[in-house]
Amino acid sequence: MKVLSVASEAVPLIKTGGLADVVGALPQPLAKHGIDMRPFLPGYPAVVAGTGKGKRVHFYPSLFGGPASIVSAEVDDYRLFYLDAPHLFDRAGGPYAMQAGGDWSDNWRRFAALAAVGADFAAGQVDEWRPDIVHAHDWQAAMTPAYIRYRGIAGVPSVLTVHNLAFQGHFPREIFPELGLPPEAMALDGIEYYGGIGFLKAGLQSAWKITTVSPTYAQEIRTEAFGMGLEGLINARADDLVGIRNGVDVASWNPAQDAHLSSCFSPKSLKGREANKRAVENRFGLVEEDGPLICVISRLTWQKGMDLFAARFDDLVEAGARVAVLGSGDQALEGALLAAAARHRGRASVIVGYDEPLSHLMQGGCDAIVVPSRFEPCGLTQLYGLRYGCVPLVARTGGLADTVIDANEAALDAGVATGLLFEPDNADALADAVRRMIRLYADRALWSGIQKRAMRSDVSWDRSAASYAALYRSLLSRV
Image 1: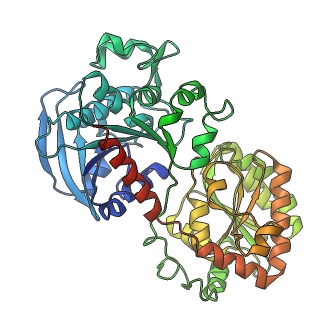
Image 2: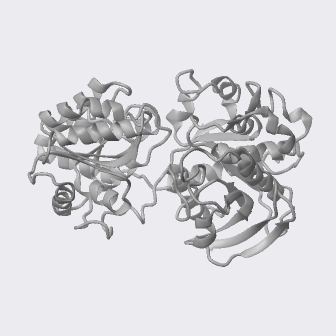
Image 3: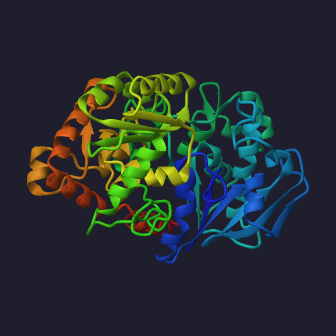
């Protein structure tokens, strides 16, 4: 079976968030199920440079304003295609925004082109490779199912995965004539959305199946609180909605063989975590002691609940926790956290930015990781925490609720607890969870048991890949 995975980013080539991890990770585990999945990406400079010399398999004299080519290439353990369109993607800055800040004004054109070419693959216009299924990811690729639908391309099912419903791709209706779609597409059951055009809405309306990155998030987005204005459409398509939890790359995130750690360890022996803890203390300028060390590794945004964390920062330190924060985001939140850390020198520290090796070390040396998100489609940091025995303290929402078993009395008695959960959007509940964590930590045998059970959690892609394979086969049975 051949599956084209249309997306705006993928590791190890280009990444702004968890979307890239999913797109880059899925091909290898799906290969075990006899599925040849190939990502199709925009030809950003990083993608072109990171794949070396590829093979041009199709040429467009004019595509949304300029010449373009489809290039077949290879990276790591999978093959991929990218759209080499310099007029759309050969720019300094990020995938979606200018260096000076602000989204590219022609993002609609850039990602409509990606989606339209994804539909060309489905139509068999790319001789090199015709997929059996097209799988689109988030708003940037969500027009792909719409192009397949309105071009009347039969026999090729489409899937849309929503990684974060908050990002929808809204554009003015004036762009419609340039999209190359028939007039009937500009309708309520098509791509029209509140008088304009909604890329994600178009995909939700047109895809054969809709998936989200966790079962709980699939249910949450059917409600007004989490549906971001699309809950009506999502409920209308409830029979075609399924949640499949993300996994992590257990080869790259392996505490027994992680070059970023000062000392490796495994569930059989946690001894190496002590050396990592000392290394984290040294890197963050924290006093060296045996007491609990909690960390945050996150974008510093409202969605991630970082304002709640900042509001209770003093309480957490006064309760006995030391705090290490790595992240960047809203300047006001960066400033609030830096000011809070300055009030507790030696017991709290903040590093603004992102450092992949340091994030590994923090997971391998900190005792717990706090994830207070207001909503979280899946989340990856808590999965890394489980893998490394950095016990997750997470809000009871989305994928966080699906992946962590709360250390309540019943779970402790049954020997199944892997972390702590608390009510989302509640600073007091967050502080109470940290205090509960500190009490549990005081019983070192009990705490060690929680860490070891967390590390034995299956956070790999194996189960999720099997679910995707089953989904794909069910769709082909309908063709």
